[in-house]
Length: 265
Ligand SMILES: [Fe+2]
Image 1 (tube, rainbow, N blue to C red):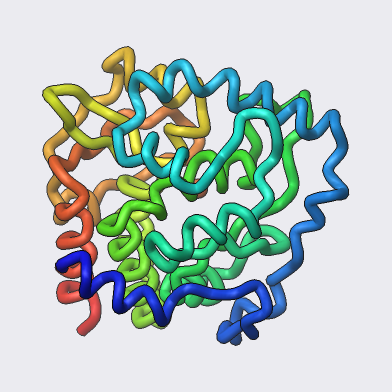
Image 2: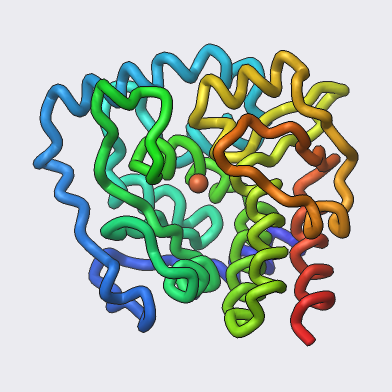
């Protein structure tokens, strides 16, 4: 898609903070982020979390992630104000980091993705859980996910993913297979760039342990193969033994379209 066409399309996407929500299923889960309520200790935890991740990310995150980090104005010294992030992100791709109260049921989650809104938690882990939290917090959601939403092809892929899942809500088996596509891209995606494996999945970006596991070459890195991905079972409680590397983000956009053709029958 050419840039002028994309820009024209985005004019309809960019939201103002006063714009009423068009979401129906997800509406009860929407909240406001009370940015002024974060304490100086919480900002200090954020700073420590980001400070610990950046040396590894500067070396091993993909270029698109690092560009997105700058484009959406993330800072190392304070918890992101989502309104500020969205003022920068909206004009780029039409995506919005929308504050939600916690885990969403699948239909609400997919409704938001299909509308280019990323469900974003606002709570931050405490010092006892610096490496891992069972539920996503703002560190995982914003540092891990949102920078990639500034990339036009990834942005289109994620919306396409949400639309397809929203169509197959009735089909448990198809939904499980789509969950694996999410796992091996959005959460644990890697890409080959200049002969090296680079990270773009949020589960890798936001975790020192998971990233180190990949950087040290422990998982088997397979070439991207949609059929294998859809059939690859996942154990969420262990380090990943197998990952799938794409050559470009066009590949995951095409995969989402192929998955739709395969599963929406
Ligand atoms: Fe995530």
